[in-house]
Image 1: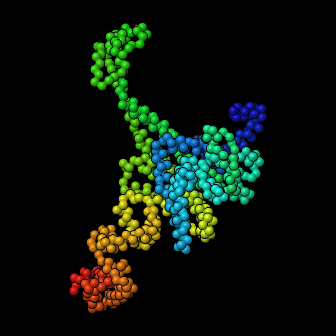
Image 2: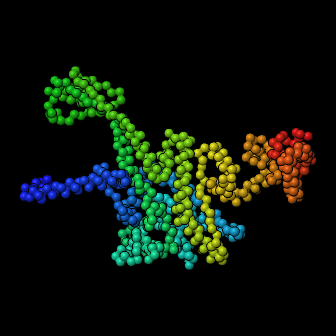
Image 3: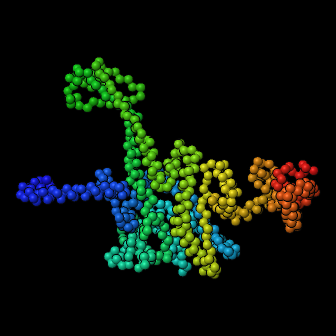
Length: 577
């Protein structure tokens, strides 16, 4: 078109046409120069080409990107979680690993008595139907699952019989909606059901009185305002200023849908591959004798116009007698090729987008080994730590614990209960290879990288109650004269019996424990100094002293024997006297 116009202009005014051609040439040179500079100094990801022509990107805020599509994303995510077996498995695995049988709280305070009261209060409340149906651990499970499938979950607290925060109600994100007057007036600012004050802080939440999907009450769009002080809103925020959460499946919704269609196509093809078709070719003479439409449809078991059996369906062991000149050709569908490999790779990317190891989502460990399973598991544990510490604890667990302590401080007239904090213990994480993992855990603890309470917390065990129970079990086993292979006080790592060291009470202990401890400590000090000084005579005397004390039934005898054996690495003193 431009060439046609330029031609007309050149005919009318050659000078004008020459100027247009010169200017167009300059523009072409400048454009190429810009592209050259951009190619040297810019980002390849921002370059325009015919391959990226249909790549449309937006520069809106988090709310601008989320708000128009949130309802559709929720509905599609839930549909896949209901009907796709892999997505259903992934959601179950996420919930089981994040919550399991419940994330336990351990009350923490400098006052032991106050700590005990707070722990008893929490334990009693957590095992009661806190929302009218589920206990606190069931609420955790339901809230986390709702967040994964729908994007966010609101815990709404209200009073009962004048007691604040006595009633808990879980609200799906579907019920958060901006009231009509808020959409019209624009003041205060209400974004997707969340009201902000002039400082940009969440001031209130606007909930529909009925779920919009309710076939009866969902038609009426009526909202109620709830102060933000009574709402705990949990979602995974990925951008600054984000008001609502999105389903965790968002990056893979389209891909999962396409994989479903691909699976249907592969399944249909597999069914065809299991079938055998036959094409019957008549002889030239038979073809000339057939009068199309003259005989009508041929019933099964009859003979057609050529005199051959009418073939409509085959059965196992069937023998067909053809006429001279006839031929039969079988139809054999081609194999799938690499469709299975492609299918598995695509599901691997879906698992990666959800943060779930592929073998947990698909249940396929046929190509896994210990190293690959452990690498995937350790990476998954890192994500679990992130989600638990940065989403579940601060937006679901801690707020509930604080509300409970405030309420019980009023009911029990214990104002200091509000000072009690909570340490949360996630569900235990089971090892891939217990023998190797336990050995590594022992080495890590012996090296001083972690302490005993931290190790027990990884297994979901409260170390204080565990220590008390362990001491009680050890005391009872000592009283009954039992020696278990798992008791490191009596049995060493090789399964051999070992005497108790001085810092562990021997079996036959006297009533004067202070005297025993003093004797043992003094003996240990003398032997250590003698070994460092190279005083062999004193060390030999120590052997004799320990052996005599042990044989005479002295309460310090077993400890002295163990000290000599540990410091010298020699035989037991009994064998040296």
